Each structure stands twice: as structure tokens, then as C-alpha cells.
Length: 195
Image 1 (tube, helix red, strand yellow):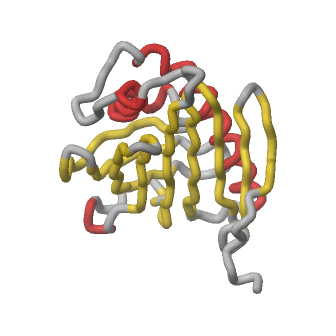
Image 2 (tube, rainbow, N blue to C red; image 1 turned 30 degrees about the vertical axis):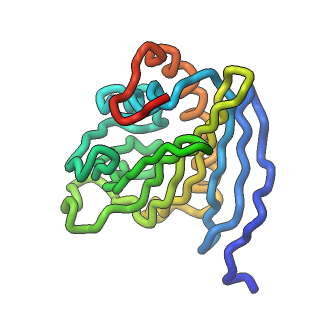
């Protein structure tokens, strides 16, 4: 029974309008789910997400990000580097992302890209098994529900309890930063999104 993935999310914390849930994933690591309500358009969120130079200002511990390949108007291969807190070593990841918009909202799915997308870089431990989703749903009161679910195996030798603690802290910091950055992008529309 322990080998089965736990389908039940457990409440972790609710602070400053940001709610964090966790659930057991595999090998003692947890999957994170973060939620908040904030006013934003889908186009503003996507414009923020595609602004690679600004990624370090809101994604916790991200030090660099760039698109390696644009596969289509809605699909990218992205390389991101992370500065890890001591005693961990810096990490990087190569991801495939694809977004869509339908009557239910905006969805961005992120998976680990094929290893052939980019060779491992000196000085970085590659994050593997990346599986994340951003979901945005506009509400009638002028706000938008933003939900992020993510699991990644950060690799390296840190104990699981520490990696799980850092994952929760990072999700909260990312959402806090996202809420600060989004107002700067509200004047933007996105050519692929009709709102």
C-alpha cells in the first residue's frame, strides 16, 4: 500500500492569503500545492512568466532563466538555474512547458525536458522528475485563483525532511513575490490569449 501515491492533500499553512498543501509523493519527498487569490489577467501572468530577465525577482532562488527552444507559440524548452541555500549545491533544470486557455481557465503544464535538450552544466546538480502545473481561474469578483502544484526531485544528498521543508518555504516565497510582481504586468496583453 505504501507504494501507491497518496491522493489526499494535507493542509500545511495559510499565511498572508497564501495557502500551502502537501501530499506524499515517493521516496519520502512531498508534492506541493500553493494557492492564492489576486487580481490578474491570464495575459499579464503569461507575460510575467515569459519575461526571463525578471524570473529571479519572483521565483524563489532562481538566478537565471532562458528559453532554449520555442517549439510552438504555446510550447517552450526552458533552462533555469537556482542558487541553493547552504549547505546544498546549486541546481539547474531543463523543462518542457505548454499552456492552454479554455472556458475553465489558463493552464501551464511543466515537465522535465528530454535529457538531450541540454547537457549537464559544471557546478550544478540537475533537478529531475519535474512535474508542475499552474492553473488560473478568473472569478466574478475581479480576482483570479492562482494554483501551483509541483513535484521535483532535487537530487543531491540532502535529507528528505530538509528538502520538503525547503520546498514549502520556496513555494510560499514564490507566491509572495508573484503577488508583488503581477501589478507591473497588468497593462500587457498577450498575442496568444483572447480575454
